Length: 155
Image 1 (cartoon, rainbow, N blue to C red):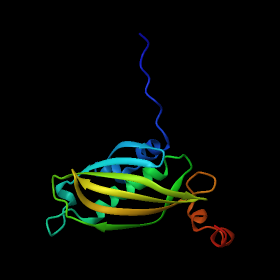
Image 2: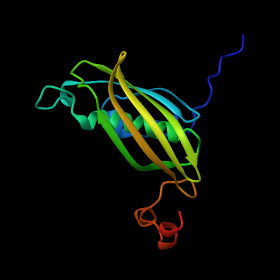
Image 3: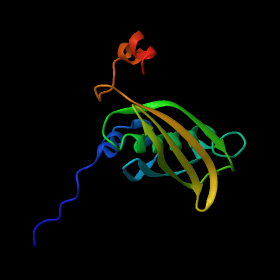
Image 4: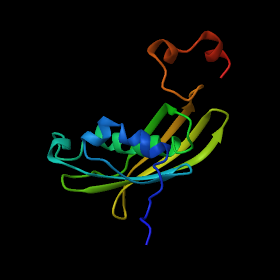
């Protein structure tokens, strides 16, 4: 019987493998492809704020990472142009959270993605991210990231 080969990692998986911030807090990529992604994170003692609940920054990080995986699943390097989150219920130490990202629209170099963060069936947060695909498909230098006057006036 010939050896089994798994599919090579896609663009979202390659980007996530280099994401030291997300990997450093234990975020796991469960699925990614075609404008969607599912990630998981356990709330650790280091993530709890002075009120005894998960710090909102960690919830945002989880949702933002799911957004990044979904919008980079198409291939070209895509970055966040903005994002908003609504906290619906608190998360606590020991909770295992799952973030599900879904593409809502892509137009030109821009996109809109929604991410739902849940603890089991319970809604914890809703996130909306706005993406921008970079010209050339590689991460820019600091100077390039600032953009040229022509690019800012003609997106």
